[in-house]
Every structure is written in structure tokens, then in C-alpha cells.
Length: 415
Image (cartoon, rainbow, N blue to C red):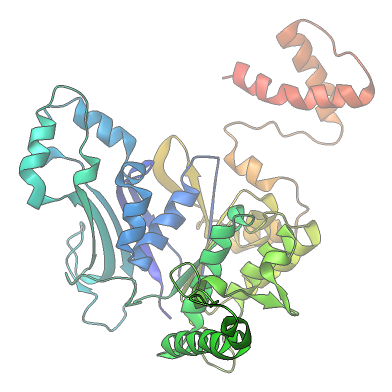
């Protein structure tokens, strides 16, 4: 089984520096908004994809840490001090000499892959002229991206050292995202030269329609003829879809789309044959799902044992029902992730069986008030009087909402 042992980021998006160890089976990344969950998934996706054009289309200014840029522009702006971005994936032993080496920032010999966004030295003189300008002009356009193994060899997406898929359920209604997902799934499952055979046969089908189906029509037209498009915007990849019961995934409801996409990725190998996926990156699997379907999906995630899963979630249900010991906590004000691996097995099993009482909110809270029974309704009113000097007004339902709304105010004032 191939998997990622560690992710190391330098000046990538919100992270100045990040060292994140991963479990070989399940990893549940949780945290508040802007804490970096999606950033970690995209970093892994970019490196494993090895797609230089994709990185250039996103733009280096969108990837390099903003604070690093700000600090550089406030310095002497020396060429040798220009910030560099790197994403390194430390892998388990792959038995592949092309992957093994010390081309990493830890300077250790192991298997791995690396992406760097660095100044293009061939344009060094032009970059220095920009840095000599008085205004705050950073040379983003003069950066280049490199993909290398830890052995030092370059690589691209054509050579898949680890086959992966990204399921981003936050973009379920995005047509481009859906097409990217279907293309990625096709590329993951296709074997050997099948892809080229399929493309060739698809082109022959289009030629057959022109030569036979449209023949009589074209015979009546002088100087022109009808044909089917066959270019970068009309080919097998753009026309390909994923169906369930002869219904295309794009015609399913949003929740069903999310469920199908994630379920398809989680399918086990059939008859001992690999389904082609080593690492599955799943962004917010709970998105658009009903409570029942969410529970069904959680059971499928928990049962997956033939690939490494990295799941980013806001869901209390996901974090509690899966093994809390595999949870990685992120915080927006820190680059240091926290692990819950030291929880006992008994504690983890308790939360798997416990009612869904917002476990994640409790874990991530700075302060908490623990009450038993109806004590909440007694204490909250007294807290309100103490802080505001007034009494609760309105119906009992409104009072309950006021009491709950008081909690953040009380915690803030008690600091």
C-alpha cells in the first residue's frame, strides 16, 4: 500500500511553515474557517498531479504566503532573500529508486515528491531591476514551478508515482469542478494504453457520423458540410460523464452527487485487483447530505482500508463517528497542528457511540461551561443579568435563544 507519511509546507498559502504527519489509513482534519484544511488538501493534490500548467494558471501570487511577501518588501529586497514556496510529500518505502534521495529540506534519505515555486534564475537580471524600483512591486511573473522527486529527477502528471483523487464537495454545483472530477476518475481507473484506444475509437465514431449519418444532408449543400467538433473543447474527455442507472451524475441532486462521488472513491478493490487509487482527498463529505445519507457515508469511510484517506470536515457527526484518535486539529492563529492520537481506545469508542452533541464544537472551543440537566437555563439568565444589568424578555422560546446567544458573550467577558 502506497501512502504519504508527512506533508511539509514552506510559504504555501496561509502557512509559513507546517510539518504534518499523516496516518497510513484515515486522517480527519478539522478546524475553524481559514485554518488551512483545504490548503493541505490542495497542496497534496498539486504535488501528486505534477501539473505545471495548472499551477501557472492559478498564479504564483495566489499560492505564496502573503506575510512572506510583505516582510520581503519591507526588507532590503535582495535577490537572494526572495521567498520560496515548497510542498514536500514524504512517502513510505515505494521500492522505486527514482523516488529515493535527499532532495528535501530535512536532508534525509527517503522516498518523496517535491514542488517548488522559485525565482527563475535565467531572468535574474530582470528580477533585480524590478527589486531596485522604489515602489512595492513583487516579481510574481518571474517565478517558475518545478516538480522533482527526492532523488532529484523532474516529473509531471504523466508519471503517476501515487494515484490519487480529490473530491471537493464544496464545488458540487460547479460544472468545471464536476468535469475535473470525472476526468480524474477516468484517468485513475484507465489501464495502460486504454486511454489512447478510447480516444481513437471516439474519433472514428465522429468520422462515421459525418461520412454516413450526415452524408445525405451534406450532399445537398454546396461548398460546406456539417461535421462533429473534435478539438480541445469537444473530445472524449469533455463529453465523458459518470452515470448511475443510466442517469448522468450532473443530472442528480446536489446531495446525491456528493454521495456518488465519495462512494465511488471509497469502493474497495474487486477480487484483489486495485481500483487504482492510493490516496483519496475528500473535502467536506457532509456537504448537501441528509442525516441518513451522512451516516451511510460515514460507515463507508470507516470501512475503507485499502487506501489512505485525508478528510477535511466541519461536521460534528463525521469527527465523532470516525476514530477521534485519527483527528488532526488546525487553528487559524497557529501553524502547529494538534493530534488526538493519545486518546485511549475506550474514549474514542465512547464518542463513536455517543449522541451527536456537537463534539467538534466542544473540542475546538477556547472555554466551555459544563452543566447538568436544566442548569443551563438557570445559569444563563443570571449571567445575562450580571453582564447587562437587565432581565430576559419575551416568550420562553425567545428566552432560550437569548440564553444560548449569551454564552459567547459570557466567555469573552470572563477572559
